[in-house]
Image (cartoon, rainbow, N blue to C red; front, side, top):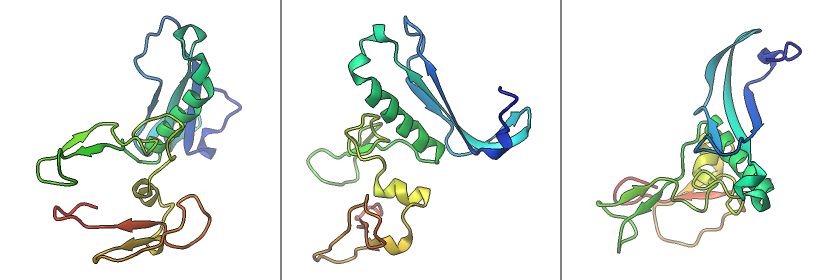
Amino acid sequence: SNSDVDFTQYNRIIMIYPEVYPRICSWSGLSTLGMNTFETPDGNINASAEIVTLPHPDTGWTPWYPAQIVGTGLHEFGHGLGVGHANDLECGNVSVGENCESIAYGDYFDIMGSSTLRREPYSSINREHIGWLNSSQILSVTSGGRYSIDSIASMSSGIKALKIPSLYGNY
């Protein structure tokens, strides 16, 4: 570590380093899930830690270089904020049922399901978990009707998400 850095002043540590070739790691990013205690030269700190690799040009990832770095960085940072993977619920011919299978990384609409930049950075469920949406911005819907919601990316304080109960207790 660098003696000029006082780690007690930080609660998020992000490390970016170049990938070696041939590739020796099967991952492009790693993270803690939420905060952990780390021993530093300045004393123990409570922080999250994320690692993101910069792809080596010989891997063939060069055209995706910026998207891969930012997408993986956002994905790993989400873990550091305490968010898990966004899965898909596969229920066959029904929308939701008793015999559904959870598919890891299957939610292609959330950066926590896939680390490509074509995804919304974080879903409303994850934004609520992180604390970026408060209860006044989430409407629990218990009856049919027409509802209006603001864009999740807007700075408004209006409703940005709906919680809709299913027969199985999930939203």
